[in-house]
Length: 288
Image 1 (cartoon, rainbow, N blue to C red):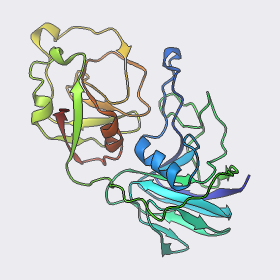
Image 2: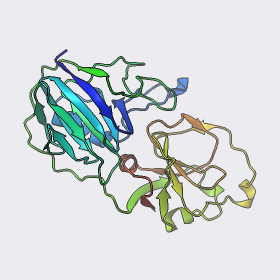
Image 3: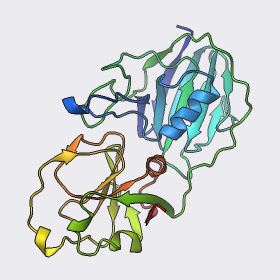
Image 4: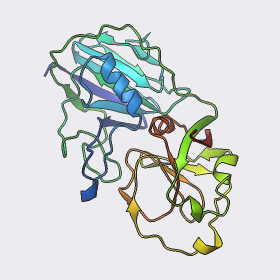
């Protein structure tokens, strides 16, 4: 062990995440992993360790952690106001911290999830090859709590050689997501309503899915009362339950589902969707 993070506070929710456990859907186990994979991967590059090492996923800030040993870390995803010993530190840049210093994250003005990547990765137990917490199945470590001491693994690779990554940050206004036609598009009487209206992110959203609120999507007369056998689901599916309000599946989605999928959000835009705050406006458009 090269060091550790002593957790002083966690905010609304702090989880351990990596790239998940792909390849087990046939056994009923979803992939899980970081909700915003782009931000997670950027963090790995900034601290110059290989992808797949465990990091923290912090929802709406509130994290406080004391550094044990000398650590290099980076903050990516939602740009939460960050400080070390009450001095502001930059986002999307390597931070070299000394023993006893305290990192604190405030609430981001835009975006939902901030990733804390520590060089070497967090040394937590794995399940099926992953340290990710799956909130749907309960696999993986428990949510991080105040008082936890998370060890950091040794890493002997080259050190980071960048000062800051000039990346686009999550946007706080209306977000446009690209979608592809789903396998049950023809089940809906006016599928164009999916794209023609502005949706709002529900406060009931979580890592399983982003719930969208708007004018309900009605089925055609032929499919009004039709039951659908369970089908395989993927990250990005827009599934429409009887309420007519779509659910955009995120990292902890179920591996099967019995409601029709009207469209599928592109992989890149699922990462952007994972940063949507409750109440934020969303428009959907066909990918060209």
